[in-house]
Image 1 (cartoon, rainbow, N blue to C red):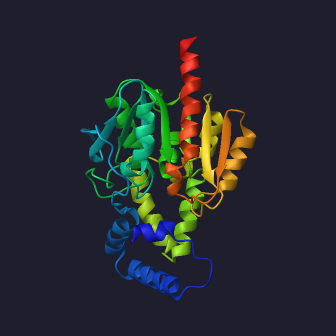
Image 2 (tube, one colour):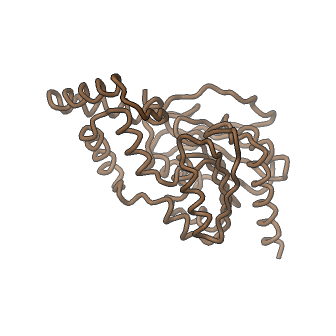
Image 3 (cartoon, rainbow, N blue to C red):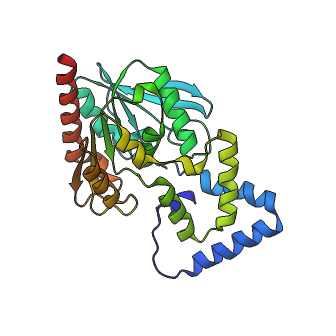
Length: 290
């Protein structure tokens, strides 16, 4: 259900959307606590995607514990670590082709499934939980020389204040850089009661001491002093290309590579993503050499 809320983009009148609005508002009015509990399950439970890419030979699974539960990790290759992070309702399997490419270039591709995703424990997912899991991963490994992130995973990387993640190159694939606005739009389009949604968000804010209004991936990206390459498709219906274009115009350290025909998810296996990694890894190697 949550996958349908976040990834559908209806623009015309919908009877189903109207019925969702009426039913969730009525539920909230008549049984507030039960409505919040039900809404939390609906809004914060990601879909667990089935593996679509062939698992690379030699990949090593591991476990990392964090407040969100036990995360399943995936390591491939030998050498400096590139951390790989998927997005909402995604999984590491989406990045298998890139992980193979990273390993072939003499690096370790270290990935993990967020709580409630892939093979990791947990049920719920949201940005504060993503940030917690990401920072637990950073604590669990050695030095990280770069990050490749998709969709909401990009927002988590930019929101994190972990010292290991601040001065390294970023490869952002179809990033959700207007996270807050995107979230509000998606829930509003679904017809879900915004009053009930705000109560669910309030619980998360209090539990994590993470005010929703403090989330600002765009500003954090502009403040970074390391190179970022964004790869974004012109037909992406979930993450807005104009936001990525604006970031590239406002920062000399941000470069945008535009693709056609891949959409929001298939772009992760595109040649443009592989090429962007090569450029970032090569540039970082030259800097470290001198």
